[in-house]
Length: 80
Image (cartoon, rainbow, N blue to C red):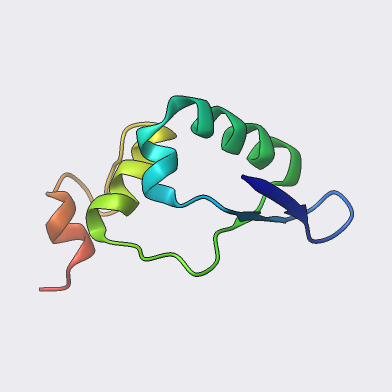
């Protein structure tokens, strides 16, 4: 994984790693979390993001909660 700063102290792009891989590997999550703490904004370019990979990545940072109350993840992501 390569961390490429995009400006002085704010924002970085992560290269060579996908969100699904980060969700599956605690060692990668730890490095991503440290990059997030340092840069505040992380860009993951050219990602094939599925609902499942997005939720798995999000759960690394803590329990997922819908901003509109308790509903299933699928209902919160997919419009009715």
